[in-house]
Image (spheres, rainbow, N blue to C red):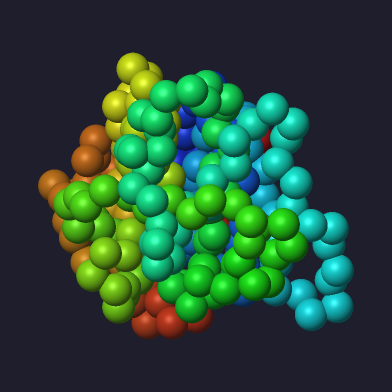
Length: 218
């Protein structure tokens, strides 16, 4: 993405009771189409764990004391998140562990990251299809990582949940639409909020060689 289309100023600061732990595959971490890091940039109460290095032997994942860890992925037997969130008798803040990568990479987190196999697995209730248009998803229920996080936080954050979801989806939408615009796929009218003055499009002949980056917050 050209610097003229940077979304840094659009990234909100979201204070959440839920702690987000993004477990990202090393190959996914380098992709400009990654969306999980948008949530990390917006949420001070979050952290990133990089996995996938064969010679890297990290300690097992340990949830913060006093929190309730949950793994967000639709493994067989996963419990709907709304049922878990509404269950009485446990008011501990949630540590939400979210795998980030393609479907195959994400599905292996239980076997590849120590301490995760014992975490209860939760899944999102059925909802609208993904609005991600930058990558192909083979699974019908597949979502961009930030979409999944946003929908989970809508449930976990109580009255503030809808605000948190809307804020994350807004910056996600900006990234998607500005990227499509710079590729010449959509026109100005298709970009929510319009295009910043002086924004540049990629040279169509150079698209194959261009590599963008999701923004790093100043």
